[in-house]
Image 1 (cartoon, rainbow, N blue to C red):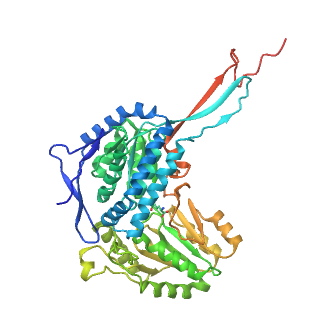
Image 2 (tube, rainbow, N blue to C red):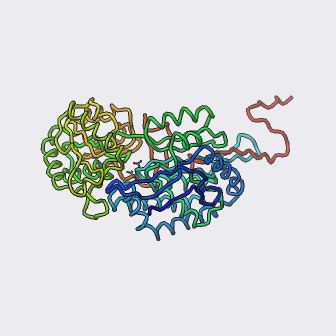
Image 3 (cartoon, protein in one colour):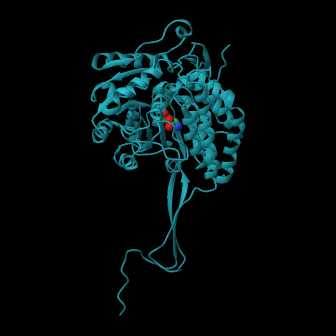
Length: 495
Ligand code: UN1
């Protein structure tokens, strides 16, 4: 029997009467991983009400105490890391090392935010007047909505939840439907650590019902959303009606620039991990390899030779390099892009669904490589799968032009031994993240994460930016002169 989960509202798990249910499915073998409630607008209303009631108490809990609670969550997550990592792999399909990495990224961030409870710095700034003191303090926003994707089913929820909690907000959390079990296990750990009722509420269900109801609710002032561009734009437009702060982390079309002086074996490992890690289903995945013509043939041959012995299969087997893609929908969309690629570019490796034996039970695709000119759909649109477009260029300037000529700007990378060129790339690449001699994936939580252009709307998550995302700044002027002093007003001329 598959385990049934309710909604978590006001500190209690419950299943509303007559609730409809859906199951999450292991993409490696088709088995159900958990059963969840398809939440309704009434459920959202109850969750937002609970979060609103819990807000004054949580806001007034000293931030270091909120941090203690987060540390407790982090400790519990460490104890459960092996089990939770396994659930990530079973529900989402990433290989077990990455399932554990997903959980580790959660732990890292929760610990980092726990420490923020003793900082939450404001500013002190001089006044233009005498005997006057000026400073800023941070205050929570209130009830926030966290809407999260399936590709980092514990890490991205925790990026949002831990940051929102340390800054004193209460939360309604809606996870991606196909990784609701991972999300529920995360919520259980916050519950076990003794979070007061109503501070974190969990409503599963569709974006069209639960997500839209959250974005429409006037009691919610901030919506933090990670997902695809189309949904992100819709959330932004809907949120604009209520003048909400809508924080968006959307797609990427991340390039690796491989220069003629690069360390090719190092780059080879990086490109394989960047393009095919998580089956290419990271916002930061390497989806374009832009290669200097002098090393183009040599590198492509190396890449294809490695892929010929690249183990695709059971993601729980530590010897596997790439598991399935996350769902039937993902498989369909990626195969459509592969068909598009076959028409407009040259297929160099892969390009098929894997069949036979264990493959028949899941959504396994071959790692796929196209040689393409810049400008094709596969070279410009986000595929979110194990499909790499390789593009030949004559030199650095063309590489940068190609790299920048897409609608996205999340991550980017250059492999070169020329330090001057590396720094030029840091300056030239239009992206929120640039790596030098490392792949486009693997951002660390203590640094800001996010991008330019259609990757978002200007915000950043994680790092110090996490605090910005979830707090309001209050500016305070304290006049201790005991008389009316007027800023900006010239003093009356002395007679
Ligand atoms: C994402 O794909 O949305 O930098 C997040 C990385 C991970 C996070 C990816 N730490 O690849």
